[in-house]
Length: 308
Image 1: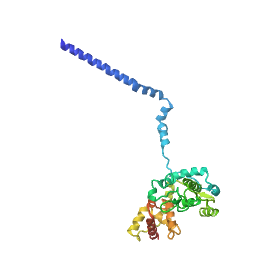
Image 2: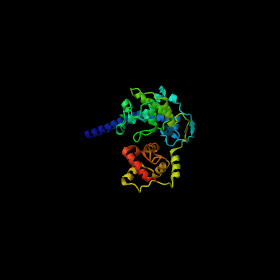
Image 3: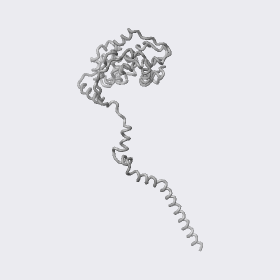
Image 4: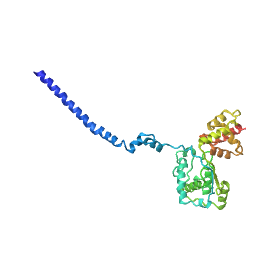
């Protein structure tokens, strides 16, 4: 009789654990699955559900929200003529100018000069950036007219020109740089202001040219450059050829840019400034920024041989 009792107990044990298993499954279904199913049924007719079902719905909305706009592919803008700069107002150094200058300094200058103008930016040590907060840190004058001139012409080969900035922005940037120092910056005389205006025509009406997408401009330039002359490497030494290869991306464009630049063979400052201001459209690339003084001299000599 004992075997029969043992079998009956085993059956009841299995039944008991089976019931427990199904009970646990029921609890889990009630807690985890059923709420989601109820919400799904409730939301199926809602706008949120409909958005998720079609291509113009929720997913498409997120795609549009986070899609990056290619700044190079701008809408075309027709050129306009803007009135010249009010020099007297530009020389005042208002609170609005200081605020604008600070934003420009952070974006354009802090990488070399540091956030406080001490020359301790990430690239400052390599390029020998000076401390603009002390009088001894200035070598080209520290008056507002001096600073605007430096921004407009650059300090080749290490500091590029900032003539791409509107004149008002250059004055705002100059005023902010002045505010970083704790020494007196003298007021420029009327003759200096007049000389600055004659050099850069700040007070004259300025024409802003048409703007087109980069792809359109590059396509047009490519059409215009087909069949043109290019740099001649046959008269160069290996060192000169290697130097050109390190900074030139499109030899035909370099050739055309220099052929249209009068006086560059005799004026190395003009040569340096023009190359920095014109790349990459002039056929050079950012390798120019890595050249030291001696290499700029060698580049000038090599190109005189390469451009007939």
